[in-house]
Length: 198
Image (cartoon, rainbow, N blue to C red; front, top):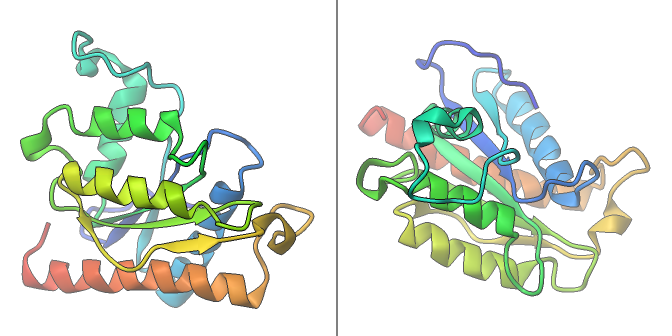
């Protein structure tokens, strides 16, 4: 997923996977979303990959300014007009790594990078529910974090069968569902930029 580092004047969507696995289905979902956004906008919308790995467990005693991984994470969110999160489901909930990231993002909840940020969710799972339980909890967490949750949740069930041997989603039906989530979010973000620049 490209991060061009261009001027903040260009619209930007941040993509965040709740999985740390290299072969994660949810990271594959976001790669598909990045392609869809780039193709649909002829590259006029920046795609920012948000890395949640490497951050310590949230601890209010730690100085966030002295933690490079936390600083990079917060800076990525601060550049974004919108956020698309793909979450795995572990025991019916989002991953601990994703919850930890949200805790770091809301250390200063009143003016943190999630406050008022349009955010959409997707999930992918080898199972029949497609991670829908995790998404339900994630969307509630996001609202509590001050994010503006937009669009309907998209849960991709039996995702292992829809991904190619090289780990990419190419199935037209699955890609159409990913596109719906990504483009709904993008439309909200562009409308908000025209009304009140972020």
